[in-house]
Length: 570
Image 1: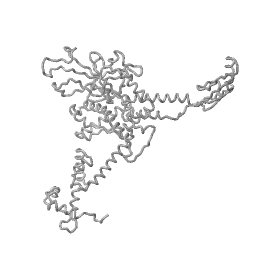
Image 2: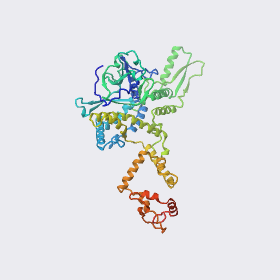
Image 3: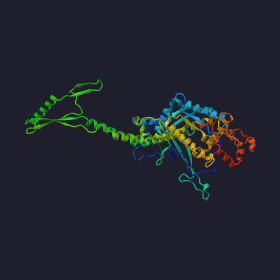
Image 4: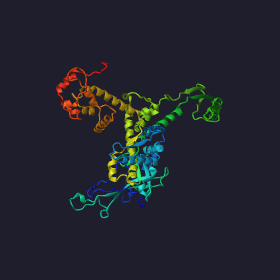
């Protein structure tokens, strides 16, 4: 192999020499091929579905051309990426990133630059569809090796059939034939653990459909490229038996083949059994065999009416020179029979029955995690209550969310390379920041929106029911956590926003309202503001003053005197 092509981004502080493991690193995405001692790892499928990964990708692409499979794939892609004339299909969400506004602005600018390099606004549908069908997608990150600080210059798509991710196991010369080397000590750190080298192999000579990955040296032939120079994302589905990356179309192979066979058999049956055919019994008397056959042909040509339908012009004409595939039967009958007779052979029955076709269509859709109700527009779209939402739609929404998370790994890779090359962040900072960088996709699933609205409505209704018991049986913290289902982060965030809005005068201070609505302690029934200092409160601490009041007196006053609006009862 040739020398590694591309660039590498090294960590400033590598792992400690004592941090070792006998297990080689693995991304658990099935995109690994191990090469050792000059042999390239290849898997063989005993079920006959595929011989190599090349054949597997080829089969996936052929499946995507089938009308039913294409319809299901389009539903998934259209749900995952929503095309809008005003907004981009995906945006950067940095709300949970603990960084300065300047750093966030730079990250957003670089992400927009990456989307422009990919032309993602126009090609988002094709990019996502290629990733979904193939189960993997590769891009070459082109940079100026003389000016790496300028960042990415171009992003080029690579056909999945031409790219392989390889891990080569390194072995020491002294223990070439032993695994691994052990020093005569009891210290496990004295083991010489194997090391791996990770890189990509790009073979531009492999092309669809004549290329093949089964050849002896073709598997290892190609250009050796560094790992950092290639951005890739896989489906995450792995065949654990041989470590092959699978597409989401893989489990639909059998269902699609069954649907094809049942449709072909149905067409053949209807073509052969649909028309009614007649049986002519011709009396030939005592004529010899030759003359009887001649007489039969003369009678057949005399009474035969050959009607032909021209699909091109829409005309029906009498054309006797053409023989149809389905002809009537002409049978001779000897002397002593019942003479000339014409009978009818009925055509096939129940030709309009397609229950089996519908069954295999639904099976295909379920294998692709698409709700069968979307098949042929069944069921219509109903913007009703969430209780009317099908469970299949909720499952489909979660499935699309998982696909988005997996595809976002491609953006993470691009963003990491761009930020590190331009020295915006350090490798150590990126390891911390990457966990808080999210991607906001445009959403068009109204079922999820309806579900969230209905849940919020139910929670607010329950809150109104429980509110009289706040402070008596339940605390506010319990209400917020158990009724409103707010997390710790949401509680802190809402408290911060409420204080800010009270300070800005957007909303009234509820504590001040409660003080103004307190009754006159002399029992006159009138309402007047109560000075917090009279209650023993310090300035700026009305809560402490209220808590210092006699509990029994407060409870008696609040029970005996219910505050009513000034306009009287409603």
